[in-house]
Length: 118
Image (cartoon, rainbow, N blue to C red):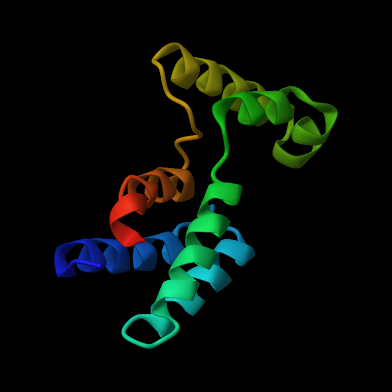
């Protein structure tokens, strides 16, 4: 991986781990990847990290569906869930594919470098 790409992904990975919406699974994958950088495990951990990021980024359609579901209303509260669904539809109308919470936004930035990471 080119140094500029590596530096970018390391910086974004650290920010991702600090994001309040980052899942524990993603934090663990991020930490494992950071620990592997510069070692013989880097390639395998990069592949695992990308897989985890692709699994965890929330498609906007899924965000809307969850926010509008009973489970989403219980999780967020009815008013917040309604606002999230409205916001999700705004993202969708603007052509966005994914949730724009702090974690998903960072994941999207990292995944833009996927080809350069592998």
